[in-house]
Length: 313
Ligand SMILES: NC(=O)c1ccc[n+]([C@@H]2O[C@H](COP(=O)([O-])OP(=O)(O)OC[C@H]3O[C@@H](n4cnc5c(N)ncnc54)[C@H](OP(=O)(O)O)[C@@H]3O)[C@@H](O)[C@H]2O)c1
Image 1 (cartoon, rainbow, N blue to C red):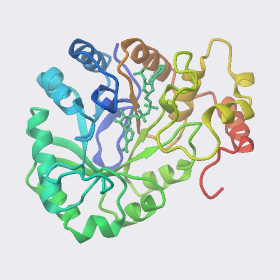
Image 2 (cartoon, rainbow, N blue to C red):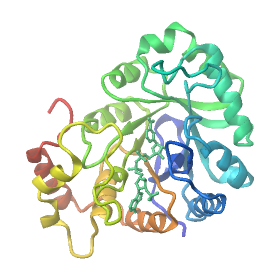
Image 3 (tube, rainbow, N blue to C red):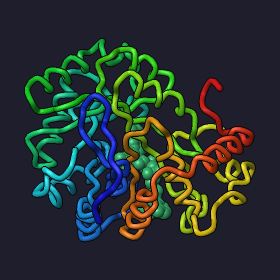
């Protein structure tokens, strides 16, 4: 399948599919499900076969980078490759200690490792992981080092995986080409911040765009969007009485993904899945584009009444 809708990723000028792929589900190990190699190979290649051209990963995601290197490095020109830095690569993780460190040494070590693991000579986008404060980014030289790696041609664009309150500072710094931001119908805190990032000329990459599958039949609300605050997703859905307005034939998952895609300032949403059938469903939903305007407006009003509103509104 090709012909997926595309948008320009802010000032990078790169055209990306509005449905991207988040490769965290492939991590395995103690924090994820075990994914057999054949399944990872199948899903990663299905992503590219479908025409998705944006792949997001991180040194923090277990085997994810390694699997990308093994199974799709030979198709490197078909995807814009985004990873992260600040993860513990040159620094040993101690219990109770920080999960990310933004020193020059640790930033460089992460990028060298990502290049090796993913069998590539360039990373299209490297994002600071963990939404550090502006001071943390600057005081140990982490930002300077990432910019040095950019000048060396190892990194094309720089970004930040960012959340409020630090996101506002990150936008004001004016150095980032892109921001990765959590957002869905069930997690609307960053709705206005996404627009602020786009207005500043940055690319916007949305994570959590299907609310971790929470409303799907197989997940049965057994998961929640990462970092969601406020009412539980199921309560929100029920209080907003969203089932009442679902058009005939539209699943809750299609509604959720298309709600995310309806954000006017979204450039891509990196939906994660290790399941080829879910990938096919998401592709079909994304091909239908944003929700009809009247349905979108009604849903937003209902969600606001139920307690899901953008920060500051
Ligand atoms: N920067 C950060 O701090 C950060 C944090 C979290 C994630 N991320 C990035 O963002 C990506 C997505 O984030 P996310 O995993 O939090 O959110 P998400 O994309 O909303 O949710 C992914 C989850 O939804 C399930 N899913 C996907 N399509 C489905 C479908 N059609 N039906 C039922 N379930 C479905 C997947 O399970 P199945 O495998 O069963 O389909 C997976 O567990 C990650 O892969 C990662 O690249 C970044």
